[in-house]
Each structure stands twice: as C-alpha cells, then as structure tokens.
Length: 130
Image (cartoon, rainbow, N blue to C red; front, side, top):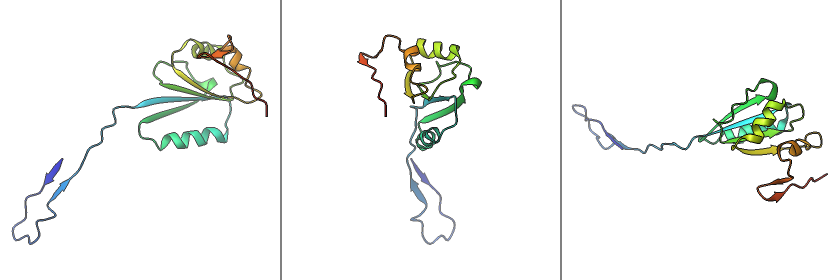
C-alpha cells in the first residue's frame, strides 16, 4: 500500500508526504492446548516460546479444570499427566488432534492407556530410563 498526504500551503519539503507499507495477513492461526496436572518450569518455557510466535494461540488448563473439547485445537501438549480424569484420556485417545506428550517416571504409564498397542504411527514406543 502507499499513503499519500496532500502538501500544506507553503510546505517546503513534500518528499516525506508518502509512505509505502505492507500488511502481513496471518490467516494460518493454530490453536494449541497445554494440559497438565502440575505446575512446572518446563510448561512456562514452552508457553513463552510459543507466545513469541504470532500464528499460535495457546490455552493452558489444569486437567481438573478442563472440559474435554479437543476439536478446536490443532495440537495438544501434555506435561507429566498422572491424575488425569478418564474422560480426558478417552477424548485424547479418540481424537484426531496431534499430541505431544512430555512424560516422567510417574506419568510414563499414561502412554499405555492412550496407545495400548505399544506403537505410535508405526513406531515402537521405547521407554528410556535416565
């Protein structure tokens, strides 16, 4: 776009009476849901990175406060879910939404609930103990 401003009477310099600019339209907005049973610094780190990206809208819920409506999200990120209500687990299992799970020794058994066959998209789940 180009904006032109009419010169004032007696204006000496009219070179700065126009401005060219661009409008960057972000129509590719993605909604991300972060679910957790706990408060953890890893959650804040991920949220802060995603907040810097204009095309992501991030919602955070504790599992006890979340009403499981996953269809409006493009990605669900879970952090260390241990005390997750079964209705949320069922919705995660049935949903087509992409799922990124952060697990620890207390929450790794959740993988067996969501992926009972032991595989994710043809890749075997391996438990790594540190």
